[in-house]
Image 1 (cartoon, one colour):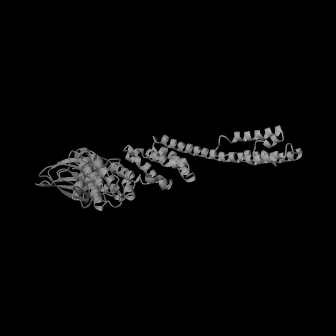
Image 2 (cartoon, rainbow, N blue to C red; image 1 turned 90 degrees about the vertical axis):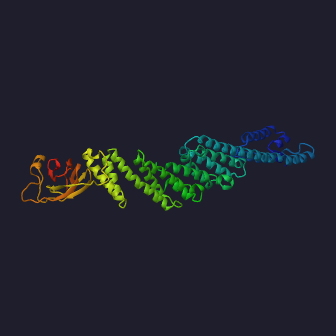
Image 3 (cartoon, one colour; image 1 turned 90 degrees about the horizontal axis):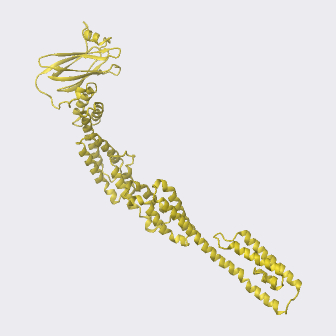
Length: 490
């Protein structure tokens, strides 16, 4: 028994008692080998194969020592085996104490490993802090996952107790664009930080859990107001819509209406400047944004924006005419007259659109805006006849501006050339030609004859002439084949 107990301590002392030096050296070598494998302590502990092999060796040594002790007989006075057995029991504390000490070393190794893991996560955050958030997002999420693992799976560790400080640095790194006053770039990072409590427990975050709310509201306000008029609406009001839906009771939400009003006033003032069309386009974008905004933006503000867009559309059309952009002016003012049917400027818009359409083919018709008033004095008759198979629309501008349509001549045909038209048009005996009569004040006029029916295929023709007092004038419209289009003589 003494030999067996002494061998269980792992030092081969039972064999020493029997003076069996080679087995004693084998036991001692096994213990040294186990120490080499186990130390320094690893977080995963001693490999299972080493523990199993060492345990089997100790058991075999104990059994072999007991067998050898029975066969060898007493080797000393009777008291020696008793003392040896007692010593063996005492020495059993060696492997037990070693196991306990190793557990402590292993715990320290685990702590060191967790601290290294925390340091690695911190390094990820530090390396990503100078990058664009979209590019660094995956790195941030990796670091955040490691912080979560430390707090959830190792809550009592020293590393877990340091996670809050690491998260404080994390928040500062992610929100760096906000600190640099780059409000639009700060929106996405702050939205991410606002979602961090879904990953990290709020008790770990502390005040960090609610910190992003105010910076995010400020960024949404500043970014949204900065984009007013310069960016297309996303259908939800952009950053301002997000602000009103996410933080409806915030101080920043209360500043949306004044910001919109100021933006509209600034563009409305620009309508009297050199670029009313640019200001109008910006007003349209502001209008799109205002329409998409939820409460507390009031309805009357949307009406104010819409009114500014209406004023801008008219101002833009007039400016386009004055800049000789006749096709654009015609479209802008025609759309204005068709959209704002109750606006008192509708008739004037149609006048300018008519002059612009004539000026597309006869630029001199756009040398100046059509007169706003109607001149007094005598009026001269201008009788316009149609010798064409389709209706014809006549646009005119001068002292007065307007347009009329003369119906189709069902029995009329086209002419092979302009010369033939001039010689024969509207002169056939016994034929009645559709006609309209204008009474015009004296002055220089510009005319445009263009197909007025849905089936008309002829090209329009522009011409000019002077109306003088005391005369009666006639025009005849006819169609020339072979690409000649409409012809007309005054």
